[in-house]
Image (tube, rainbow, N blue to C red; front, side, top):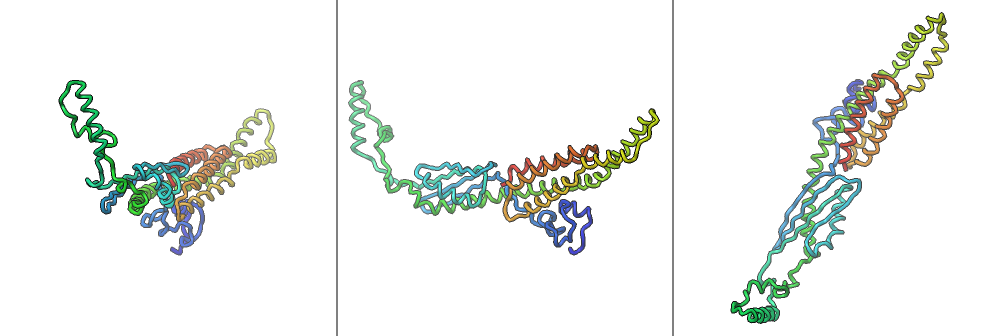
Length: 336
């Protein structure tokens, strides 16, 4: 662990961000979460997840289903039975502790075991309905009495004891316990998907680092290649008119071209962005928004390199970097 990494190892392991001993590297050669296949992957959380939980106590049964989808901001959409909407502020407070952004759908269902004592038949209302129907049947010449089951379905005949109706505050401890269990189950799914996304991001970062190394190797040769092409072209043209090319004019033209095509600042900044990205991947919390902004900057630096270099070989590497960044940007859209 104390030995220095070779240039190739640094590119593959640490995205080419620094030449330091492996023990001091932000992403260690064998122990780092990002670089080691044996270690734990970086902490990324997917904004897509599902979790459910069921709890029962005495005569009350609670079921909670939760779904999350990607969104720039946090939004809670809750569905619950009558009388339980008052719990939405408490539920949102708990959910916000685990989920920073994304659209969260919470379905809360509370069922109670019913007993005959929970309902009362209003005899006066029932008798009133019966008399009215008998009078109507007599007018029609029908002797068939009104059916009792039909009368019981009429409004006001059967009343629920108010003492057995939904009591959200009384049921809150059980609802809270069920909600916490559903959040735990959903967090596992989000973490599993986050690990897969982290592995994909690391693979793309390695691709970018390798292509960037190739660009840095090619960049010093661009001016020499231009000078050689320009000298051959001018000598061929001037030979027909018996003129000779002055070295000073050639040096001045090549110097101007080299200054315009210099991409050293862009390569340094892009490699710095890779180092920042490595830090985000090993952060203690998911950093989806920061990753979005960082990939935007990486794409901008890559575009500048492509427009300034005016070299076919560098252009090929730039295309590969752009493709890798675009894959990362699509993936990061689903990172919390």
